[in-house]
Length: 354
Image 1: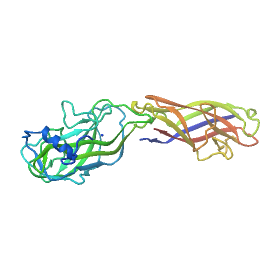
Image 2: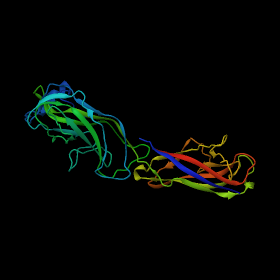
Image 3: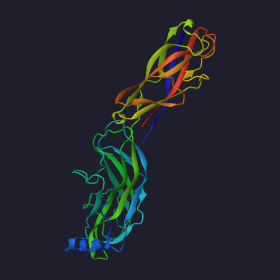
Image 4: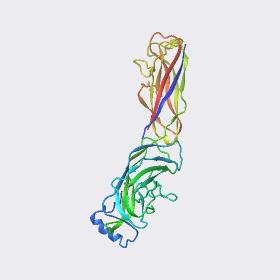
C-alpha cells in the first residue's frame, strides 16, 4: 500500500501591482491684458509686484503607494520626499496679500481643515507641505486654500521645498486591475499681484505637478501555512504503467484578503526543488528507506489540468475575507516497478495579484 502526505508552503506574496486654468502674472496673451485691466479697475487690495513673466514649478516624482489593511480616517498614508521649486518667481509684497492654494483635482477644502484638498478619489485627500525662504512661508506646514495663506511682507522669492502628503479622510476601498492614479497638474499657488505695478489680478507663482502616484492594494495574507494535503491510501495494483495516476484529492490554498484587495486578479505560481523529468507538475519520488518507489505526486488546477512548475496561472478574482484557490493532487507513476511505502512531496507557491 502507498500513503502520502504533501506539504505546500508559501514562498512569498507579491503585491503588484501598481488639469490648469490660471497663469502667472504676465503669462496671459497681450489681448487679455486689456480685459484684465477692465475687470480689476479699482483694485486696491495689498499685492505682490513682480517683473517676471513666468511661474515656478514643483514636480513630485512618481511613486507607488500601498493601501492599509483597513480603513483609518485621519491616517497620513504617504509623504513624498522634499522637492524644490524650479525657476522661482521674485517680487515685492505689501500688506496681507491674498494668496493660497487652488486645487486642480476636485474642489477646495471643506470645513475643518483648509490645508486638506480632495483628490477626486473617494476617501483620499492631499496636503502640500511647504518650507520657504527669503521671508516666504518659512514654516513646514500645509498650505492653506486661497485666499487665506499668510506670509511675511517685503522682498520675496517664491521658492523653497514642497512635499505631497496623502491623508485618508473617510473609509477607502479600491483595488482590482485598474486602480486610480494622481497625475498631472494638481494645484497652483495663487497670489494677488501686479506685473510692473499696473497689470493686476490673481495669478499662480508656483504650479504643482505629479508625475504619477499609483495605488497598490494591500497584500492578502496566507490563511493556512503550510497547506498539508493527505492523499488516500492506494494499492500497488492501482498503477498500470508509467504515467498512470491514482488517488485524486482536491484541496485549497487559502488567503485572507482585506476589502481593499477585493477585485484584484489573483495568480499562483508553483515551484519545487525536486521535479520529475519529462513530466508536467510532478514532484519526483522521495528516495530512502520506507518510501514508495517510482511514485511521485502531481499537482493540477481546479479543472484537472497539470500545472507546470514556474508558470503563473490565473486563480480568480479576490474577494474580501477568506479566498480559496482550488487545486488537486494525485499519485503519479514515474517508473517501474512500483514498490509499496510512503510518499512525501513538497512544493512552494507564490501568490501575485494586481
